[in-house]
Image (cartoon, rainbow, N blue to C red):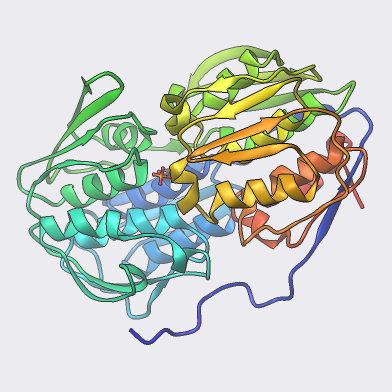
Length: 450
Ligand code: S3P
């Protein structure tokens, strides 16, 4: 199809440099969880009545999902930082958007919303920035087509911009996801909400289960049972009547990862990270850092808003290299770039196995991490789908290309806080998609940006 201009941020790139810092100290509540924030808006749209949300991540990705919810009929009201009300229209009653839905950098927003549109009698155009336009959408469109949705137009290989015509009577399918992906699982379940019958999703490796948890929270009937060694089988009863329920969004473990690794690497640091979500399908990085010898105390475990949370006390530590099994990847899929940074300072070799999914994130993260390590003279290798990092004294001094990827930007800024020489990232703009307060929050802990 002929492409309209993408929404890639038009402004000139904004480089940012991080320099060697004194001990980081203090407490920080990282921003609200991105996965839950997208879902809070989407479930609000699909529920008749007022859904109250607190702790929402007000990053660009989530706000784009909010705009899409508005275009599909919801009324969104902001009451204060992180506090929103969503007045939804309910399953089966979406409006047809009059303009393309622009998801910016947000793969999660776009893919989950494809599920919503795919299961409704509406047609919508999905688009985003240059990064989103490169990301594979066939993995979402395939099951939606099986359910009866039609792709009327698409860029090559099933990419954005694309036009999706949903069906008001989605077939209840049984679908085994080809890769461990919460986005594929969620798209099928969200489409299945409007099915008469049971939608079944099978995943061989369990991925984050926020959609299942939120479905139950809003009153849907969902059964989850183990499947094989590491997998799950999820069964959703279609056409539930969702009821408005308050949503309290805990801090995002994927954002907490940056101050966590920074505090481990900068000598003399002690930082308390508050109210961090401890869902076991999200804590792979914590497990790995503890194996590496990190001094992280998990304090005050409690349940808030249906998810377990805790405060994490992180002290500077001498780390040693470990072998990270491929089976752990789904529980830390977004944390490999910052783990690679931690590994650069560890004693010995760290091998991270089975990272093929990293190639289709906001950037080809495997290549981007390799290039960033290379730019800072860190001994590393990419062996098939594995990343190997050999730690040692880190000189730094490099400039890292971020490829519109927030996590590449934040990871290498963390590197700069502990390296001998400052590290520059070519563009900090995309950090606003997930951690808009990154720079002031880190500065308040003592991080030095120059
Ligand atoms: C997400 C799922 C993951 C993750 C992304 C958020 C979600 O993607 O990388 O940042 O909220 O469902 P995949 O489903 O592609 O693994």
